[in-house]
Structures are given as structure tokens and as C-alpha cells.
Amino acid sequence: MEISEVRVKLVANQDDRLKAFCSMTLDNEFVVRDIKIIEGAGGLFVAMPSRKMSDHCSKCGGKNHLRAKFCNHCGSKLPENRARQDMDGRMKLHADIAHPINASCRKKIQETIVKAFHEEVEKSKLPGYKPVEMDTPDD
Image 1 (tube, rainbow, N blue to C red):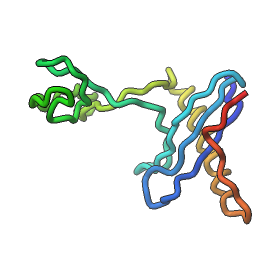
Image 2 (image 1 turned 180 degrees about the vertical axis):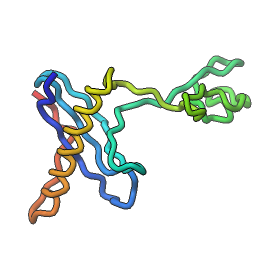
Image 3 (image 1 turned 60 degrees about the vertical axis):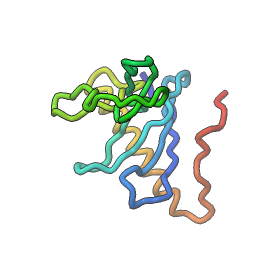
């Protein structure tokens, strides 16, 4: 697998932990969008695209995200702590849409994206800098 392109869109509020959004093209054929670069306690890390997990109301069957206290459809009170817990005991509220299967792939992706992020930060300091367009159609 070759990471053939990384596009980095810096986030305006640099005080926030979220530093940038990225898209990554693999083998000039497959794009993964909505990758995030986040400033964590141990430095920058890459968060793969994810979705909020949900469940269904026992009364009406309506779909609700796991932090909802009441059903979005019928208004019934929902049980608390419906989310499964991860290995550290934290509630699992999101599921990755796409992610690497092994540590070596994760390392390769993270190193490539963080390098592209630093390059974009340096470009942003130059006069006439224009941010990358993320939503342009690919050929």
C-alpha cells in the first residue's frame, strides 16, 4: 500500500486540541476523508473517521445516540449507561469507519500524515498562503 497523497486543512482555532482535518489517498485509487490530527498528552496523533454509535428505543424502536436521555422519536426516558465499555472502562461512544488493521500500518499512516501536517503548518506561515480545498471532486 502506498500513501499517494495527503491533504491537510488546518483548523483556525489553534488553541483547540483538534489541529487539522485530512484526506489520504491510497495507491492513487482510494480516498479516506475526515481523518483528524489531534494534540494529545503525548503529542500529535491521528484519529480515523468515526461515527456516533446508537441503539434503539425499547418502546418505539427509534434510533438514538448513546448519550441521549430521551428517545428522539417517542420521548420515552432511555436507560443510562447503554454504551459498552472499552478495555480501560470508558464508554465506547464512537466506532471507526475505516482504520488500520495492524500497528505497522497505523505507524506508517500516522508518520505520513503528521509529516504532511507539519509541512502545511510551514506553508501557512508564508505570504499569500491559500488553504487546501478538501471538498473538491477527485478525478
